[in-house]
Length: 171
Image (cartoon, rainbow, N blue to C red):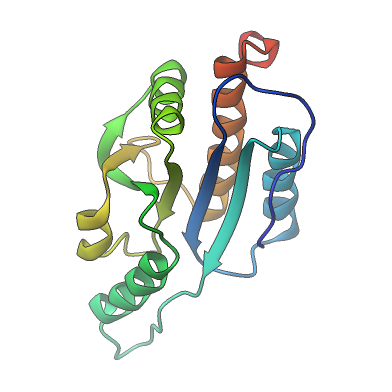
């Protein structure tokens, strides 16, 4: 599920590329459709790209830490030096939509791209957490990873609406 937003409209300020890099492939259609719905609403200068990396090998006698390392390597390989990396982690900082908008706006104004890392069933590897510039939590609840993608896509659209003064956020 790799796609970029192509919505209409202009935003003041600089462009920002947002990468949602997630462990897991072959998401159900409803997940792809939900993410695409919010992605296509975004203007080109506030693009959201979803990048999937394969789940690490797991089995009855396998080491979950090894699977997490495989996933971490795959996630980290998708980053560039220009990325401001945010690890999604239950122990991360909870942000209101307005606070998230302020952070994304600051990252954009610094000329960085934003990469959001979503781990597999065992979370993110220590290497991913170490590479992260920030750690954010969406909720103290454990959310299913397909739903996390839709929630993040909606919040990115909402963040854009706050930064652009669009009425969606107030609706």
